[in-house]
Length: 195
Image (cartoon, rainbow, N blue to C red; front, side, top):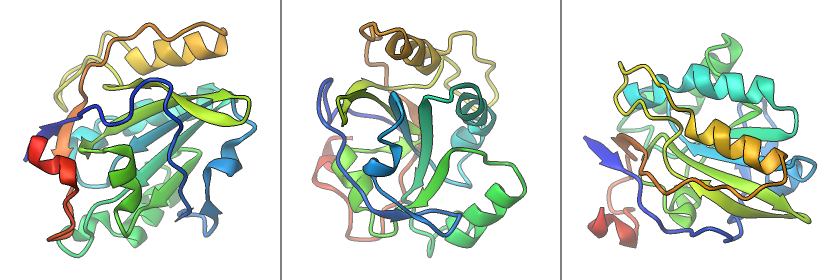
């Protein structure tokens, strides 16, 4: 089932903090990225074709920008979707399929709820504002809305360039599209009824 992102956080809102395990055995919070000028949080997973289609682009962003942290967060119910297990996340990092700055597991799904995440991928770009990460852009990564489409406009990359150049991000909210987040039964967030 496909879904589109919705606006829960608005521009200027602070990033909800988290404490999540990474595939490297470390536990991560927002403070771990405090030296970066920008933070790209992408709710994603291992199995969704929309998410898989963006692996390479996210890897490239992580490699290209030293001052930007690219963090993937997988909130999907791994019991119902075994491909989204933590072990499979680790395999994808170990074999180089995923090379983000961190790939984290949101087992409780509370972080996805706090951000208002709806689909995979669902990207949130934050500017480091004197130690507080504030939302600069939320929406699609690029203009390729289907897994087989070739992108021609790299929206998040433009937004990153604006932040690194000390400029305002002048990108309209354009909903991301992907597979809906696989909530554990009974754990759907309040906003799910509006999706």
